[in-house]
Length: 146
Image (cartoon, rainbow, N blue to C red; front, side, top):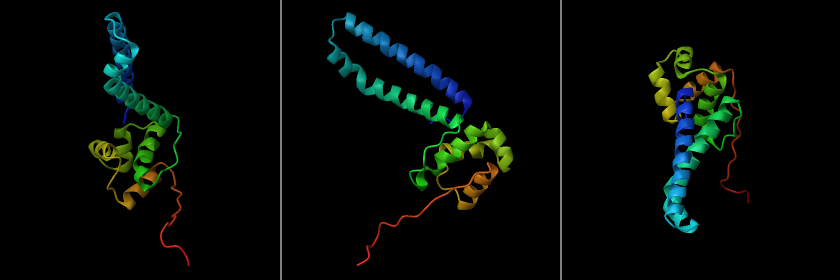
């Protein structure tokens, strides 16, 4: 996952580098006489997974920058939404830390952990800092009425 603009810029460069390497390897293996299916078997598992992961991370960060949030898939996805709030607001981790009266290292740790384990009070403080609210509903899939 990408947390900062600097990481985003590095990820874009890394993606370009990986794509260029992948293309060059494909050309080299083709020149060596390998068939497309053989090339795919050699390159696909690791290269395509790395490229897709990187592309997904970049796409998520770009959406967050635009303020486009995916619906929460459950309480477990709240952390990503909190990170997206900071990114879309244009605040750096340091600026956000000052707003919350905590250290930049604390914000970085929280974001790396996707805010797992924070208290409800802490989550509420973060939402207040962004003038955001969390709307939710509880759906119980337990016992059915007779």
